[in-house]
Length: 361
Ligand SMILES: *Cc1c(COP(=O)(O)O)cnc(C)c1O
Image 1: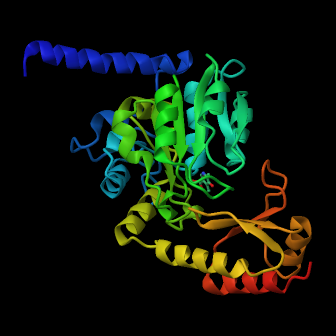
Image 2 (image 1 turned 90 degrees about the vertical axis):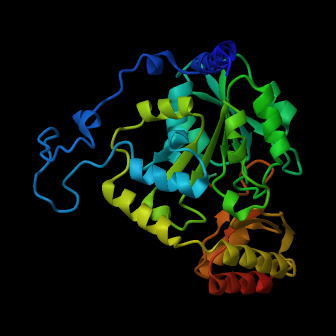
Image 3 (image 1 turned 180 degrees about the vertical axis):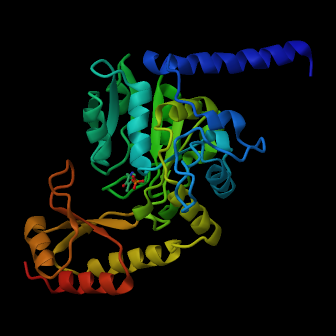
């Protein structure tokens, strides 16, 4: 390659880095990250570790876990086809990634973020905890993405736009063109929360990461992977952005036992019953259409159905009395008289269907 081309390429890359820096809080840019003595000596053949005040007696958990989660990131990298330096893994699920993103980009009391409504509740809670204003933009009546209204809600202090796709609780995934358009037109970070992407045919934004330096994609082991109890979530982004995630996260944010258990389960591909859940979702959709208390079932790309009923509060209580808990979403915008029903086992679904078919308005 010609020298001048190499320089042009370097300059382009440096521009990107510099542009990204504008979105990072100053205290985070200036931060001297916590470092362990181990970082300098890992893999050098040293076998006596008297540096971290751990117990020397091996009981399977006496050593601090790898703060960089190298082995686990390699597994996730092989699984998702994303380079390890573009991966963050949160030990409090993807909820941790949501909080860390606020802390990297949004200056408390000064910056703001924009989210869609209705959507996942944690964006609002994490914004409030970080003293960041969250501007909520109502979805269109058909639950499609109001790209222009979202952009109109932004100003020079808007650092993040939160898009949940497939969206919780509406169940629909947004076309990639819409999200691409948002990311291209917005001068800030776009986070796409793909917690339910495994249940959707819409396709993931992961493939777009290399062309979109301002994109962050969230995934989780909690839903399709069936590991909500382990608390493991992922953020994928450019190595620059992931570098800031690494600085801001607590060094030992995922226990060694959870790292090992995740690797074991990833290797065995356990808990992956996506096909069964999707076919149960279709069964439930077909059967509930016949229930007289059901007015509408919204198309779902997720492992739940949002169902419009005649009287959500009464039907919720009726299900509780029969030992079944669903989520009453009636108080959310655009969700008048709706219940969100998670797809359970075939037996659980059958019981729910039969109760709803029997319900007398
Ligand atoms: C369930 C869910 C998550 C997952 O959170 P974890 O902390 O990874 O368990 C993230 N985003 C949305 C929209 C969800 O519904």
